[in-house]
Length: 305
Image 1 (cartoon, one colour):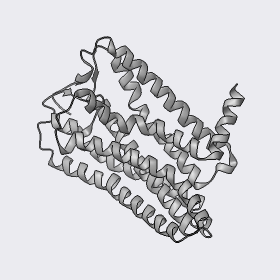
Image 2: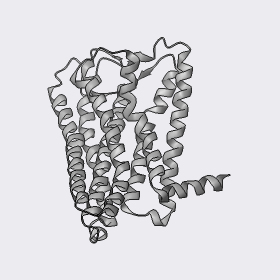
Image 3: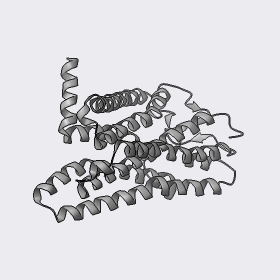
Image 4: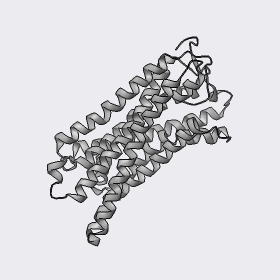
Protein backbone atom coordinates (compact mmCIF):
# COMPACT_ATOMS: atom_id res chain seq x y z
CA UNK A 1 0.00 0.00 0.00
CA UNK A 2 1.24 3.44 -0.93
CA UNK A 3 0.61 7.07 0.06
CA UNK A 4 -0.95 6.43 3.48
CA UNK A 5 1.34 5.39 6.34
CA UNK A 6 -1.39 4.40 8.81
CA UNK A 7 -5.05 3.41 8.76
CA UNK A 8 -7.39 4.99 11.32
CA UNK A 9 -10.30 3.14 12.95
CA UNK A 10 -12.86 5.95 13.05
CA UNK A 11 -15.56 4.14 15.03
CA UNK A 12 -13.45 4.33 18.21
CA UNK A 13 -13.52 8.13 18.19
CA UNK A 14 -15.66 10.04 20.69
CA UNK A 15 -16.75 6.97 22.65
CA UNK A 16 -16.21 8.75 25.94
CA UNK A 17 -16.56 6.72 29.12
CA UNK A 18 -18.60 4.03 27.33
CA UNK A 19 -15.28 2.68 25.99
CA UNK A 20 -14.52 1.28 29.47
CA UNK A 21 -17.84 -0.57 29.61
CA UNK A 22 -17.21 -1.96 26.11
CA UNK A 23 -13.68 -2.96 27.13
CA UNK A 24 -15.01 -4.84 30.17
CA UNK A 25 -17.64 -6.61 28.07
CA UNK A 26 -15.09 -7.53 25.41
CA UNK A 27 -12.57 -8.72 27.99
CA UNK A 28 -15.19 -10.97 29.65
CA UNK A 29 -16.36 -12.36 26.30
CA UNK A 30 -12.81 -13.13 25.21
CA UNK A 31 -12.08 -14.83 28.53
CA UNK A 32 -15.21 -16.97 28.19
CA UNK A 33 -14.26 -17.90 24.61
CA UNK A 34 -10.77 -18.99 25.69
CA UNK A 35 -12.00 -21.01 28.67
CA UNK A 36 -14.82 -22.80 26.84
CA UNK A 37 -12.79 -23.72 23.76
CA UNK A 38 -9.69 -24.76 25.73
CA UNK A 39 -11.91 -27.04 27.86
CA UNK A 40 -13.30 -28.67 24.71
CA UNK A 41 -9.82 -29.19 23.25
CA UNK A 42 -8.42 -30.61 26.50
CA UNK A 43 -11.40 -32.90 27.01
CA UNK A 44 -11.02 -34.41 23.54
CA UNK A 45 -7.21 -34.58 23.56
CA UNK A 46 -6.89 -36.17 27.02
CA UNK A 47 -9.79 -38.64 26.79
CA UNK A 48 -8.80 -41.59 24.58
CA UNK A 49 -12.41 -42.64 24.03
CA UNK A 50 -12.98 -39.29 22.31
CA UNK A 51 -10.22 -39.86 19.73
CA UNK A 52 -12.82 -40.35 17.01
CA UNK A 53 -13.34 -38.37 13.78
CA UNK A 54 -16.41 -36.48 14.98
CA UNK A 55 -14.77 -35.35 18.23
CA UNK A 56 -11.47 -34.53 16.50
CA UNK A 57 -13.36 -32.23 14.13
CA UNK A 58 -15.06 -30.58 17.12
CA UNK A 59 -11.64 -29.90 18.65
CA UNK A 60 -10.48 -28.47 15.29
CA UNK A 61 -13.44 -26.09 15.36
CA UNK A 62 -12.53 -24.94 18.88
CA UNK A 63 -8.92 -24.42 17.83
CA UNK A 64 -10.13 -22.40 14.84
CA UNK A 65 -12.24 -20.24 17.17
CA UNK A 66 -9.16 -19.46 19.27
CA UNK A 67 -7.20 -18.72 16.10
CA UNK A 68 -9.78 -16.32 14.66
CA UNK A 69 -10.60 -14.44 17.85
CA UNK A 70 -6.88 -13.95 18.61
CA UNK A 71 -6.72 -11.66 15.57
CA UNK A 72 -9.73 -9.66 16.70
CA UNK A 73 -10.18 -9.31 20.47
CA UNK A 74 -6.65 -8.23 21.58
CA UNK A 75 -6.58 -5.56 18.87
CA UNK A 76 -10.09 -4.26 19.65
CA UNK A 77 -9.46 -4.24 23.42
CA UNK A 78 -6.27 -2.22 22.94
CA UNK A 79 -8.08 0.21 20.62
CA UNK A 80 -10.79 0.78 23.25
CA UNK A 81 -8.14 1.97 25.71
CA UNK A 82 -6.07 3.90 23.16
CA UNK A 83 -6.45 7.45 21.90
CA UNK A 84 -4.70 6.86 18.56
CA UNK A 85 -6.59 3.85 17.08
CA UNK A 86 -4.19 3.42 14.17
CA UNK A 87 -2.82 0.34 12.46
CA UNK A 88 -0.14 -0.12 9.83
CA UNK A 89 -1.24 -1.36 6.39
CA UNK A 90 0.87 -4.52 6.85
CA UNK A 91 -0.74 -5.34 10.21
CA UNK A 92 -4.15 -4.61 8.71
CA UNK A 93 -3.58 -7.10 5.89
CA UNK A 94 -2.41 -9.74 8.38
CA UNK A 95 -5.59 -9.23 10.44
CA UNK A 96 -7.68 -9.58 7.26
CA UNK A 97 -5.83 -12.79 6.42
CA UNK A 98 -6.36 -14.39 9.85
CA UNK A 99 -10.02 -13.42 10.18
CA UNK A 100 -10.98 -14.55 6.69
CA UNK A 101 -8.97 -17.76 6.94
CA UNK A 102 -10.86 -18.41 10.21
CA UNK A 103 -14.15 -18.03 8.31
CA UNK A 104 -13.01 -20.27 5.46
CA UNK A 105 -11.71 -22.92 7.89
CA UNK A 106 -15.00 -22.84 9.80
CA UNK A 107 -17.03 -23.56 6.69
CA UNK A 108 -14.60 -26.29 5.62
CA UNK A 109 -14.78 -27.93 9.06
CA UNK A 110 -18.58 -27.85 8.96
CA UNK A 111 -18.36 -29.50 5.54
CA UNK A 112 -16.12 -32.26 6.94
CA UNK A 113 -18.55 -32.75 9.83
CA UNK A 114 -21.44 -33.14 7.40
CA UNK A 115 -19.41 -35.65 5.37
CA UNK A 116 -18.52 -37.56 8.56
CA UNK A 117 -22.18 -37.78 9.65
CA UNK A 118 -23.29 -38.74 6.12
CA UNK A 119 -20.86 -41.67 5.98
CA UNK A 120 -21.69 -42.73 9.57
CA UNK A 121 -25.43 -42.78 8.85
CA UNK A 122 -25.47 -44.04 5.26
CA UNK A 123 -22.66 -46.63 5.58
CA UNK A 124 -22.37 -47.49 9.30
CA UNK A 125 -20.69 -50.86 8.67
CA UNK A 126 -17.96 -49.32 6.49
CA UNK A 127 -17.58 -46.06 8.41
CA UNK A 128 -14.26 -46.91 10.10
CA UNK A 129 -12.82 -48.13 6.80
CA UNK A 130 -13.79 -44.93 4.96
CA UNK A 131 -13.15 -42.24 7.58
CA UNK A 132 -9.77 -43.43 8.82
CA UNK A 133 -7.35 -41.35 10.88
CA UNK A 134 -5.11 -40.99 7.81
CA UNK A 135 -7.96 -39.75 5.61
CA UNK A 136 -9.14 -37.39 8.33
CA UNK A 137 -5.62 -35.97 8.79
CA UNK A 138 -5.29 -35.30 5.05
CA UNK A 139 -8.70 -33.62 4.92
CA UNK A 140 -7.94 -31.43 7.95
CA UNK A 141 -4.58 -30.38 6.45
CA UNK A 142 -6.26 -29.48 3.16
CA UNK A 143 -8.93 -27.70 5.17
CA UNK A 144 -6.26 -25.35 6.57
CA UNK A 145 -3.72 -25.11 3.75
CA UNK A 146 -5.94 -24.50 0.71
CA UNK A 147 -7.91 -21.50 2.10
CA UNK A 148 -4.70 -19.92 3.40
CA UNK A 149 -3.03 -20.19 0.01
CA UNK A 150 -6.04 -18.58 -1.67
CA UNK A 151 -6.18 -15.81 0.93
CA UNK A 152 -2.42 -15.24 0.65
CA UNK A 153 -3.00 -14.31 -3.00
CA UNK A 154 -5.74 -11.91 -1.87
CA UNK A 155 -3.34 -10.37 0.66
CA UNK A 156 -0.68 -9.82 -1.99
CA UNK A 157 -3.21 -8.16 -4.30
CA UNK A 158 -4.43 -5.93 -1.46
CA UNK A 159 -0.86 -4.92 -0.60
CA UNK A 160 -0.43 -3.55 -4.15
CA UNK A 161 -3.31 -1.08 -3.76
CA UNK A 162 -2.62 2.65 -3.73
CA UNK A 163 -4.58 4.20 -0.88
CA UNK A 164 -6.37 7.54 -1.37
CA UNK A 165 -7.97 7.54 2.07
CA UNK A 166 -6.99 6.07 5.42
CA UNK A 167 -10.22 6.31 7.44
CA UNK A 168 -11.71 2.87 8.07
CA UNK A 169 -15.29 2.79 9.38
CA UNK A 170 -15.01 -0.67 10.89
CA UNK A 171 -13.74 -2.05 14.20
CA UNK A 172 -11.42 -4.48 12.42
CA UNK A 173 -9.65 -4.65 9.07
CA UNK A 174 -11.76 -5.83 6.17
CA UNK A 175 -10.25 -6.43 2.74
CA UNK A 176 -13.23 -5.07 0.81
CA UNK A 177 -13.26 -1.93 2.96
CA UNK A 178 -9.60 -1.45 2.04
CA UNK A 179 -10.55 -1.75 -1.62
CA UNK A 180 -13.06 1.07 -1.09
CA UNK A 181 -10.25 3.25 0.28
CA UNK A 182 -8.02 2.69 -2.75
CA UNK A 183 -7.89 4.82 -5.88
CA UNK A 184 -6.54 2.15 -8.23
CA UNK A 185 -8.35 -0.28 -10.47
CA UNK A 186 -9.48 -3.10 -8.20
CA UNK A 187 -11.27 -5.21 -10.80
CA UNK A 188 -8.89 -8.17 -10.38
CA UNK A 189 -9.12 -8.03 -6.60
CA UNK A 190 -12.93 -7.81 -6.72
CA UNK A 191 -13.08 -10.81 -9.05
CA UNK A 192 -10.69 -12.75 -6.83
CA UNK A 193 -12.77 -11.85 -3.75
CA UNK A 194 -15.93 -13.08 -5.45
CA UNK A 195 -14.15 -16.30 -6.45
CA UNK A 196 -12.97 -16.78 -2.87
CA UNK A 197 -16.54 -16.36 -1.64
CA UNK A 198 -17.69 -19.10 -4.01
CA UNK A 199 -14.84 -21.45 -3.07
CA UNK A 200 -14.80 -20.92 0.68
CA UNK A 201 -18.50 -20.43 1.44
CA UNK A 202 -20.94 -21.23 -1.37
CA UNK A 203 -19.48 -24.59 -2.46
CA UNK A 204 -19.01 -25.92 1.11
CA UNK A 205 -22.52 -24.77 2.01
CA UNK A 206 -24.01 -26.57 -1.01
CA UNK A 207 -22.14 -29.78 -0.12
CA UNK A 208 -23.28 -29.49 3.51
CA UNK A 209 -26.91 -29.05 2.47
CA UNK A 210 -26.62 -31.98 0.06
CA UNK A 211 -25.23 -34.21 2.84
CA UNK A 212 -28.00 -33.31 5.29
CA UNK A 213 -30.73 -33.75 2.69
CA UNK A 214 -29.39 -37.24 1.95
CA UNK A 215 -29.25 -37.95 5.70
CA UNK A 216 -32.86 -36.81 6.05
CA UNK A 217 -33.96 -39.11 3.22
CA UNK A 218 -32.14 -42.06 4.81
CA UNK A 219 -33.69 -41.32 8.22
CA UNK A 220 -37.20 -41.21 6.79
CA UNK A 221 -36.74 -44.80 5.57
CA UNK A 222 -35.26 -46.04 8.87
CA UNK A 223 -36.63 -47.06 12.25
CA UNK A 224 -37.64 -44.46 14.83
CA UNK A 225 -34.72 -45.46 17.09
CA UNK A 226 -32.19 -45.02 14.28
CA UNK A 227 -33.84 -41.74 13.28
CA UNK A 228 -33.70 -40.40 16.82
CA UNK A 229 -30.01 -41.22 17.20
CA UNK A 230 -29.16 -39.68 13.82
CA UNK A 231 -31.02 -36.48 14.61
CA UNK A 232 -29.29 -36.26 17.99
CA UNK A 233 -25.81 -36.31 16.44
CA UNK A 234 -26.71 -33.98 13.54
CA UNK A 235 -28.69 -31.38 15.48
CA UNK A 236 -25.65 -29.58 17.05
CA UNK A 237 -23.96 -29.28 13.64
CA UNK A 238 -27.11 -27.85 12.07
CA UNK A 239 -27.53 -25.26 14.86
CA UNK A 240 -23.94 -24.11 14.43
CA UNK A 241 -24.23 -24.10 10.62
CA UNK A 242 -27.38 -21.94 10.69
CA UNK A 243 -25.86 -19.46 13.15
CA UNK A 244 -22.58 -19.18 11.24
CA UNK A 245 -24.34 -18.82 7.89
CA UNK A 246 -26.48 -15.99 9.25
CA UNK A 247 -23.33 -14.23 10.45
CA UNK A 248 -21.70 -14.57 7.03
CA UNK A 249 -24.83 -13.32 5.25
CA UNK A 250 -24.90 -10.24 7.50
CA UNK A 251 -21.20 -9.58 6.91
CA UNK A 252 -21.42 -9.94 3.11
CA UNK A 253 -24.60 -7.85 2.95
CA UNK A 254 -23.13 -5.01 5.02
CA UNK A 255 -19.82 -4.88 3.15
CA UNK A 256 -20.56 -5.79 -0.47
CA UNK A 257 -24.13 -6.02 -1.65
CA UNK A 258 -25.92 -2.92 -0.41
CA UNK A 259 -25.22 0.20 1.57
CA UNK A 260 -28.00 -0.09 4.14
CA UNK A 261 -29.11 2.90 6.17
CA UNK A 262 -29.03 1.68 9.77
CA UNK A 263 -27.72 2.83 13.13
CA UNK A 264 -23.96 2.50 13.51
CA UNK A 265 -24.27 0.32 16.61
CA UNK A 266 -26.53 -2.15 14.75
CA UNK A 267 -24.16 -2.30 11.78
CA UNK A 268 -21.22 -3.02 14.12
CA UNK A 269 -23.21 -5.64 16.04
CA UNK A 270 -24.21 -7.51 12.89
CA UNK A 271 -20.68 -7.39 11.46
CA UNK A 272 -19.26 -8.84 14.72
CA UNK A 273 -21.73 -11.74 14.93
CA UNK A 274 -19.46 -14.12 13.02
CA UNK A 275 -16.48 -13.34 15.29
CA UNK A 276 -18.23 -13.35 18.67
CA UNK A 277 -21.24 -15.67 18.67
CA UNK A 278 -19.86 -18.91 17.07
CA UNK A 279 -16.76 -19.14 19.34
CA UNK A 280 -19.09 -19.00 22.37
CA UNK A 281 -22.01 -20.97 20.97
CA UNK A 282 -20.02 -23.87 19.49
CA UNK A 283 -18.46 -25.23 22.72
CA UNK A 284 -21.72 -24.69 24.61
CA UNK A 285 -23.74 -26.63 22.04
CA UNK A 286 -21.28 -29.54 21.95
CA UNK A 287 -20.83 -29.64 25.72
CA UNK A 288 -24.59 -29.72 26.26
CA UNK A 289 -25.38 -32.27 23.53
CA UNK A 290 -22.51 -34.75 23.83
CA UNK A 291 -22.46 -36.56 27.15
CA UNK A 292 -18.85 -37.77 26.84
CA UNK A 293 -17.52 -34.23 26.36
CA UNK A 294 -19.70 -32.84 29.16
CA UNK A 295 -18.61 -35.58 31.56
CA UNK A 296 -14.92 -34.94 30.89
CA UNK A 297 -15.34 -31.17 31.36
CA UNK A 298 -17.10 -31.75 34.68
CA UNK A 299 -14.14 -33.91 35.75
CA UNK A 300 -11.78 -31.03 34.91
CA UNK A 301 -13.84 -28.61 36.99
CA UNK A 302 -13.98 -31.00 39.95
CA UNK A 303 -10.24 -31.63 39.72
CA UNK A 304 -9.58 -27.88 39.73
CA UNK A 305 -11.66 -27.45 42.87
